[in-house]
Image (cartoon, rainbow, N blue to C red):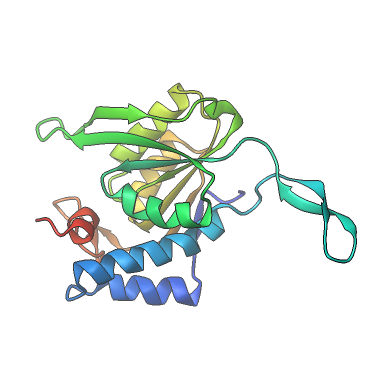
Length: 210
């Protein structure tokens, strides 16, 4: 992918995102919308996958038909909210390998602390798509990409639902080689680090927790 930031302005993506932003949207509906929008975003983030051909026989004749080349790609969820995007993407790419990165923010240092890391093997031979609905400060996302690179990943893309300019700038500074695909670039972060206008806490809205 050529651009560091791609905003997916497809009408269906934008419509579903508006429904997700509304504070009155129920947990069940929010979850369903997230699953649907993740499939549309997955379509965009998987552009330019390497292709090859193989011989198939149609009902009429034999032909060389296009298929994906190389190892199965890896989807890596940044816990816990990343799982909402992961579920929808797996419906579109059921053969993908799956990994998880668990990070929490230390309230004193405000730096991300790792508590879980389990990813597929041979990341150096796979396209790795890291998923997290919110790119806010960018600190957790940048730390997750650090861990993926340490594990051998060299071709990484980052997929989110909403991004703040601060998070995009932080990611560009830390990982200029990692393209970001998002449904919207919002205005700013507030003093608590939430994206404004945003949609609140994606994890809480997805899992019905407060």
